[in-house]
Image 1 (cartoon, rainbow, N blue to C red):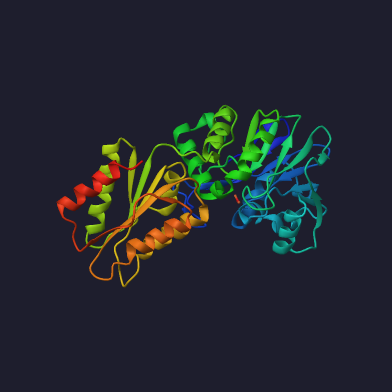
Image 2 (cartoon, rainbow, N blue to C red; image 1 turned 135 degrees about the vertical axis):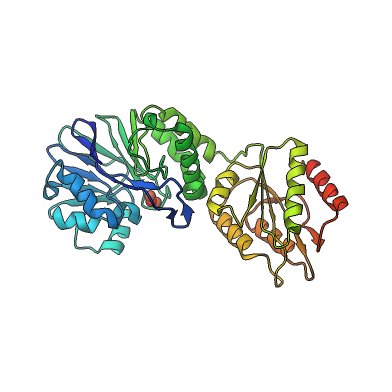
Length: 388
Ligand code: FEO
């Protein structure tokens, strides 16, 4: 695939990872891209690199434009290895280049990944680097998605190189938002936010006004397509994602052994439907936790069920609760349910997991021995329908 010239002298030189299906445990059904950008000026700058296995592909793309030896600055907006993995390969060619990174977290993080033999230029908020006709301004965005993150703004071209922010795991031969299916891209942007940025909504809320204070005609993230025609849409979507007020919807998540907990899940589903609350049902045997979290992001209710097995909940449910706790969804109403043969610990354990997520428990754990009767299921639906 050819490089794309975004503006005179500014090129997209990153790579498409068409067939990757997992990004540290988050399913990437539409693949991914690791975007990098090259600016040719009196000084030459490369903004971010790519995953290490794609290093030679990155260098080949750079060579289509300029000899990598001529790179003066390697701007590292983020230490995570999907963006920094090719730093050693690039620096092996760009032997006089200086690595520009955030102070102190980027500087410390890169040294711990790649050693201290490179020349580093740690930068802080408001620092400006002149390349000649272009200048680069650095804006720290800590915890979006690691402590070291920053974004780089080029005011002359009104481009924000936003790294993880506004990214989507979406592989395409097209580069821009208006060249692809927006429904697909927005769905991937939401999944990306839910699984990567959700724990840092507070930081996002502080960052959005800073970004809105910049005059931007192109957002060039490090994953997925660039935003030129839907900048307002993606910024507004991020305001919605990071707003702690939930949407009026419910998510019911369960696993089951002999269908009793599944029957309970369907009764809970029916209750929300009776109540007029849009609801989705997820079976952990077939649905991936990263897809479920995309719906949990803005859900008002999160209801989770597991049967008891060997005095525990099912491991699939434990895994989901562990993943959800880490992503720290805010302002959820919740309750637990589950069937059992003897013992009957699972619903209580799931309830403990929901409490650990700091959710508001709106119903005591619902338990049934062996098989729920029709009357039990009807009563459960009615209790759900009567929830606040
Ligand atoms: Fe795309 Fe946090 O790395």
